[in-house]
Amino acid sequence: MTLEEAQKTVDSWIKTIGVRYFNELTNMVLLTEEVGELARIIARKYGEQSFKETDKNHNLADEMADVLFVLICLANQTGVDLTSALEKNLEKKTKRDITRHKQNHKLK
Image (tube, rainbow, N blue to C red):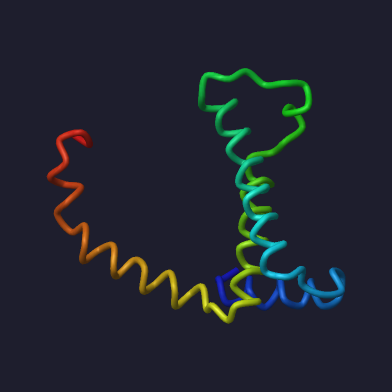
């Protein structure tokens, strides 16, 4: 699925199953909540924290998908074409960082 297809699919889902979009502020709060849930799983799986019983049923891929879903909702609501935005962002990063990371002794 492309980003464009994902945006259309989420929009269709919202309009048929979800009834309507939550407002942008609510979705921003939901995005923050979902990123926190993802961070908790990362901290336990890759960091030094141990899993709590309540964390054991969480799935890393599902948490990432939750973040992506809400981000796509926000993009749809605010008229952002994620494909175009990502392309422009990669172009910006490439110009800015063309030699930066290669010259970073911490990365070698």
